[in-house]
Amino acid sequence: MTLPDGQPDVNARPEATEGPILPLPGGDIHVCQDGPRDAPALLLIHGSASSTRSWDQLVPLLTGSHRVIRVDLPGHGRSAEPSDRGYEIPEQGRTVGAALDRLGVERALLVGHSSGGYTATALIEQRPDLVAALSLINTGPSLNAFIAPESAAFTPAQWPPADEQIRRFAGTAFHAGYRIPQEVVDDLRGMTFHAVAASMQASRAYLDEQALPDRLAVLGKPLQVIFGDEDRRWRPSSAADYRAVPGARVELLAGAGHTPIMEDPSRTAALLLAFTALHAVRAD
Image (tube, rainbow, N blue to C red):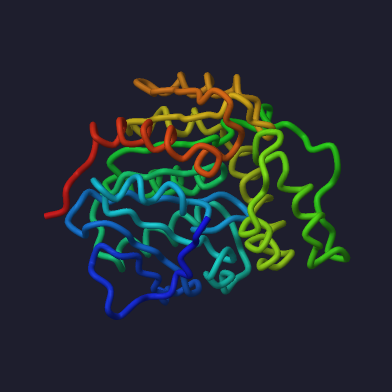
């Protein structure tokens, strides 16, 4: 797979990828944009210990009808760690909202993969007028749906971990037999131990406070839930919990694991585009 380096090209056309660093009060945030700028904005938010690169295979399938925006969350990818070293989900939501403001986006469709769905939900809670609709991809609905790993994660003494350690840790993020790409390994190793541990703890705390379907049920936003039926991190059957949200579309991807955006981008994109076609808002 060929990956863009994320560096801005001063000679690029508006439809080409851009990778600016946005200076925000809590720390610099790396953003990529693809597709026509007057198309409906589609914001992709990655999960913990990942980056904008996790969407690379999906993006070309979406740019025909969307202005696709990706952000590296604080402490991930090329974004700085938050200045206060905090990774609380509400603060991540505020950061993403501030990035959209800097980009001049007044309304967007949100897509969150895994824990990126918690940041997307927090943004809706804070600024509902900014969000047209939400799609969640393998985002665990509650802590009782979590599948505990067989072995513990890393310790500070093990940091930075070796490739094989990371591949074992990341293995359950994909269906059995999937070859974990090197960029997944590199993204995790490029983070500090604090960023990895704190971002995961923040997700647990957000769910412990209130289950995601309960949060979304009162927000009144169109919701799509895509879940790989071979997810090894969250019980696939827990996708049905989102039916508590009025009008929610719950769709299972047969044969996909926790990360269908990489495992099966074509089918994932087809489901996303069918949903966004119903709720897209074109820029003025």
